[in-house]
Amino acid sequence: MSELELTAVRVPPSALGASLPQVPDDHRFRLEFRDWLAGNTPPSPSGMTEAEDFAFRAKWQKALYEGGWAGPAWPKRYGGRGSGALEQFMYYEELALAQAPRVTNESGILLLGPTLMVHGTEDHKRRFLPGILSGDDIWCQGFSEPGSGSDLASLRTRARDNGDGWVISGQKIWTTWAAYSKWCFVLCRTEDTPRHKGLSMLIVDMDQPGIEVHPIRQMSGRADFCEVFFEEAQTPHDLIVGERGQGWQVAMTMLQFERADQGYTDHAPLLVTLHLLRQALSDAVAGSSLLPPEAARLRFADLWRRCQQLRRYNLRNAVNAEQGREVGVAASTVNVFWSHLVKDLAEFKASVQADDGVLDNTPTSENLLYSRASSIYSGTDEIQLNIIAERILGLPR
Ligand SMILES: Cc1cc2nc3c(=O)[nH]c(=O)nc-3n(C[C@H](O)[C@H](O)[C@H](O)COP(=O)(O)OP(=O)(O)OC[C@H]3O[C@@H](n4cnc5c(N)ncnc54)[C@H](O)[C@@H]3O)c2cc1C
Image (cartoon, rainbow, N blue to C red; front, side, top):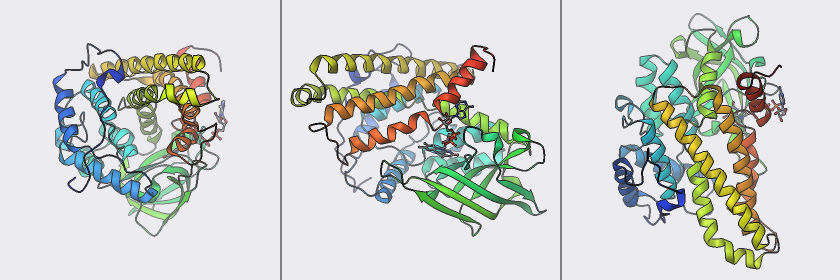
């Protein structure tokens, strides 16, 4: 970390709201991590290209790993800290308060690592988990295909067993960070049985001639997700996760981690954004025709209340995890609540910060555009609502 300037500005714990008894402000774990962050958090430079930003965040992730802070709730034998889910909850709150940069390997840390811990062999875990945490191995999630997003079970990428291993052909799309990834979790069809019964989950090395990656430019200006083409790409037999033909179960485990926000990561950055906006609000509202002061106050209060609600949902998930209970389909309710909140907060921030109603190519405008994705990835809102209707409320299909 030596060449990074250590001046990231900390936000006070009161930005998160009341101290909660299960995760109090003066908890030993919090104080220890807070102390470490105070001496090690770099400010995020502005104006970086996507590649520079990626390299910067990879360096930050390495620093967390070397400091013993990359995976609070992961077992020590795989490079983690061996703490519990409540510590992980506090960990993400402290990262947000320190205004620390985002790590690089979010798909690996939040989705693929936890899934490997459930379905992987001991060999998979020892081989892959430490590299996920250190960021030495970047991972991507190869699920969606053109025509198979919400209806994932219709996917057509095939893998055949040629005796020496698996040979994969097909196309994936929207694969986040594929251009930077060393490994991909590929959900593919290995059996002739229909739909979800014929799928398997394979770990595939991205660095081989049978794989081509094409980044897709988004409206936010970013090109962090990609099309991935497999043409006779190969992977050995032992890199199957779960049983052959049982890939759907592995995929559902991963989606539950994604929907429940396995890291309990999401409320704290939103609350920190609100805290910073509160400071900017009176000046901006005075000079902006977009938002009369009374309307701004009401919207602020509504967003604050919803962030607090999300904080309680995430805490409940952490308590359940601590007691060994799975989140299950209830993850869909949190996901819908969160996706609306993310979009509304991004719009509020934009209306406060717009200069005479214009937002031109700023981090705020990028955030506004990117926020639209929150009701698409990890399953669209409509799909989550279908799950809530059918599997929680028991309504007919
Ligand atoms: C930022 C971002 C990152 C992503 N990263 C990844 C990644 O790393 N790996 C990966 O595999 N995928 C990734 N995705 C893809 C994501 O999982 C899919 O976009 C999502 O599952 C929706 O699929 P689709 O885009 O094909 O839309 P479709 O499934 O075609 O849906 C189109 C519309 O129809 C609606 N709809 C579809 N079926 C139903 C139904 N049964 N009932 C009611 N409404 C319905 C949907 O809600 C949506 O509004 C990412 C997406 C985004 C936006």
